[in-house]
Amino acid sequence: MDQMVLQTQQWLNKTYGDKPGFGSVITDGNTGWDTINGLIRALQIELGITATANNFGAGTTRKFNERYPHGVKQQDDSDESKSNVYSIIQGALWCKGYSTSNNITQHFYSGTGRAVKELKNDMGIGGDSTVTIDVMKALLSMQQFVLLNRYGGTGVVRIIQQTVNRTYKDYTGIIPCDGLYGREMNTALIQILQSLEGYSPDDATGNFGHGTRRNLKTISRQNASSYGKWVWLAKAVLNCIRYDCLQNENWDD
Image (cartoon, rainbow, N blue to C red; front, side):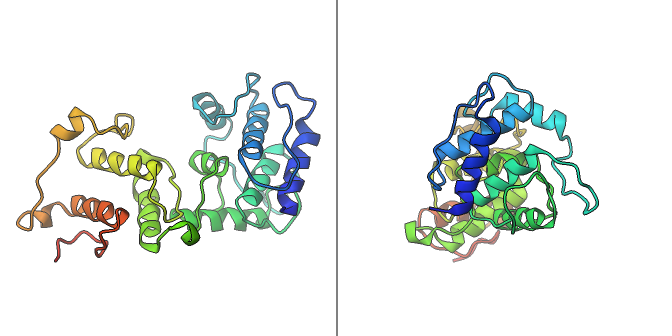
């Protein structure tokens, strides 16, 4: 049991237990979908959504972008305004194992800011403490951003995942950086392929269909220097399926 996860669960029930569309969360101090879904419903309530759901979907995305078009930003030290959205961010950080150096509050000061920056560094995107829509979606998920080597995660796959987030997140969104090759990462690799084929982010579905096959290229040693990103992608796939190679854009032996 984690005391700060427990505090998050208790805060959710105390703050939203009497709000229509919330229900309750289990107070056991363990991070799981029950708590994450509670945080999603809490955010939806804060955004004015009455038909809450255990899903960060298009409606929640639209409302978040309307309220925070430039993301949720860290407060100045002199700013004493309060927001439950700050508390939701803090609770989500604790659930992912990132310390805000404080209890659940209604402020977004430097302790929370440091935790957000640490998370964004683990994602591979870096930057300031602003919680953008992509970061918020990742926070309110069960995605992990630390290496899970005890479950088979590898450092090279994690580096690939971080590169995907840094370079292709307009196509893929934020993907886990746990070093594990799973369905979400496989979809992202197809979306990267589609980006190289000229698809727009909206059209890059991650489905390996007829159009994607039709636009494939044949890469060889002779033309590889002109297709570095294609070579990088091919090597990423090889590393993900445990055919070890040096992860770069060069065709080598």
